[in-house]
Length: 439
Ligand SMILES: *Cc1c(COP(=O)(O)O)cnc(C)c1O
Image (tube, rainbow, N blue to C red; front, side, top):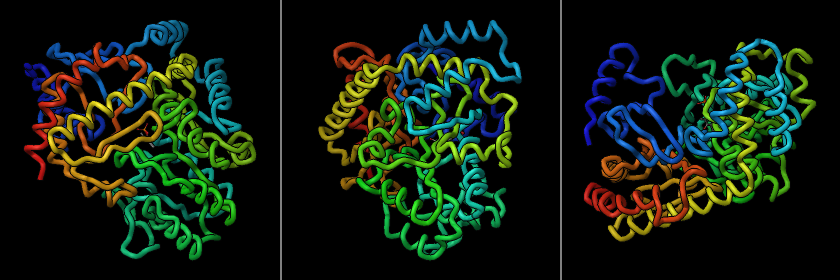
């Protein structure tokens, strides 16, 4: 497999962009090697600058639910672009997309933004505005975009002030962020015992997907919901990754709808933009109506609700029928089975975890992973070897062990047909490479 064109582009990119990328994980730092510069995608496949073809199991980190360049999405987007790409006025597609989100999820009102980061940042501002409180609770290993206050790490005590997770975030900005271990209701109770009347909100991924897939234990989200309600705090579920992906509405459908609780606010992104920069936050009407221009909490965006982006999202969601999720689920199970079988055959200890149609693998871990400490116990060297063997065989996996694998409706669940046949052929060799590299 030649990679000279990607190497040349990467060298040029590093001259003009930090690390040669516009988002750090794309640089392959966790696995080493040259990132592949993709030039096209179609269905389940990506083609790089050297014309190598890969089965794609990243799906642009989640958005490409229907696969790349779905003909109906492209047709709708092309037509929308021809009518004008941005008006700076309200327009019909954003209304239709908001209606679709309200119909699928428990939210009553939606405000559109352009990235998941903006969605969580705005939801937290709104929660603080609504409650008149400053403190927020988040969980270690949950990622909510690069919002200053959410780039916090736990302090040393059980319930302490958050410390900045990156240079550039002042200590006072994370001082109001309480960082707790995931899936630990006792830690939540301790935080509320100490700061209950000062906490504006708890924000959590509806099912954690950014430390690998770590689903909430049964009753954990419900506990968060009840605890927030008891203390006058708002409960925010971040469904930027899981929304319209883990299941038709999102992880709430698997969890909240079953256990009978509702979030006060939710955030969405990824799938709802259909591959374009579109995201949203939404929730209870009485909370959402505190936003400008109805209420005093300011929030705005030049390209928010952009007609091309919302057309892409709307078309994607309209095509994402229950049958699409059934197919995704079948493909996901099949891939999990193939990978698990190959790893077991090669003697690689692993734990496979799912959240609806999403899944990931923890390497060298034999126990279920419940939190970030458990996720960090994995053997990333085994994954690095596996990743490169798969890449060389034309299978594109996330360039980090801490990421979910994403399939699309364009992946045929039939193991005897492409693209899964390519995956099946590549797996035994990659599993042996992982076994050889395992610590
Ligand atoms: C991707 C992600 C975000 C951030 O979205 P961006 O569009 O990358 O800013 C926020 N929350 C979760 C759960 C995510 O997976």
